[in-house]
Length: 86
Image (cartoon, rainbow, N blue to C red; front, side, top):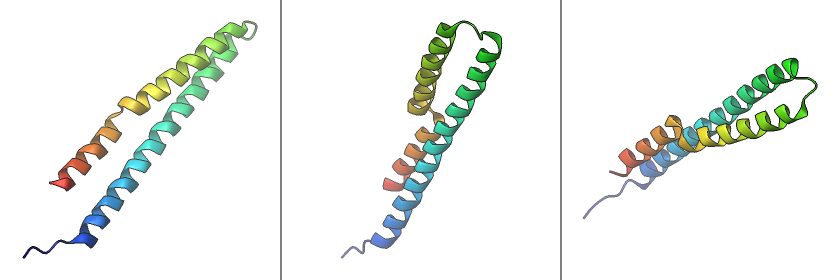
């Protein structure tokens, strides 16, 4: 007869989910901080040309979502989850 430690597995699962959510929030915040800084930098130099703002805004959104989907932190959290399943 096998004894399954359900409470221990649930605790590990919840810890992994908490780490994963922290990683996601940090990546999103970092992307928005960088986007805001670059936008302020762009505005200070190109005040009269609006299309620069539009291009910079869409590029920053693209890069922030790209960083979020391909970041190392979320992949690290996924590796932790894979190790816990074993």
